[in-house]
Image 1: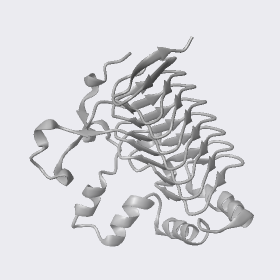
Image 2: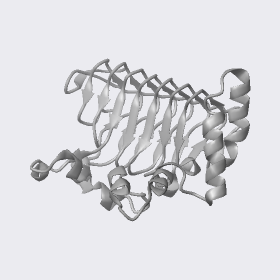
Image 3: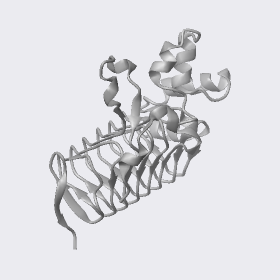
Image 4: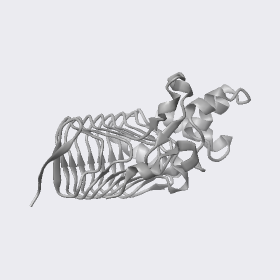
Length: 259
C-alpha cells in the first residue's frame, strides 16, 4: 500500500489546468459579475454557445416526464465532452464545465444532482457505462480528474469532492449519505480565517473495484480502499484499507478479512 503522506502538496501545485478556486474567481475585481458566472459554469466557446446552454439549462433541465427525459438526451449532448447512448438525466440537475464531463452508454443521473468539472483539467470527469448516480448527489472537482468506473452505484445525497483526484473502480457500491472529500489545511495556517487558508492534499482518493461502502461513511484525503473491501456504516476512513478487508469505526479499523 502506498504511503499517502508522500503526496502532501498544495492543491495549486498539483493542478496546472485548474481555473482557480471559487474564491479566486470572485475576488478578481477585473472581471464583471457576468464574467464570473460564465467562468464558473460554461467558459468554453463563444457567447452564442454560452447563450444556447443557458436556454437549455433554463427550459429543458426542469422539464418533467418522458418528454423532459427525451429533450435532455437530445439537447444536452452537444455541450458535453462525450454523451453516450441511452443516457438518462433527471430533472433539475446542474452541470458546470460540461465540456469536461464524459458520460458513457447507459449512465443514469437522478434528479437534483450536481456535476462540476471545473478543476478536472483535460482528463475530465468520466463516468463509466451503466453507472447510476442517486438523487441529490454532488460530484465536484476543485482540482484533479474524477474517474468513476462501469456499473457503479452511488447512493443518494452522497458527496464526492476532489482536491487531487478521485478514482472509483468498476462494480463499486456506495450507499446514501457518504462523503468522499479530499483536501486539508496546513497546521501552520490556523491563525488565518478559513477563507484565506491554502488547501493542501495528501493525494487522490481511490476506491478499488468491487468495494462496498455502506451508509453515511466518510473517506478522508489521500485514502485508498482496496478491491472488494467493505466499510461498515457510519465509519470514518482515515488510512488505507487493504483489499478484501472489512473495517468499521471512527477511525475505521480492521474487523476481519474476507476469505
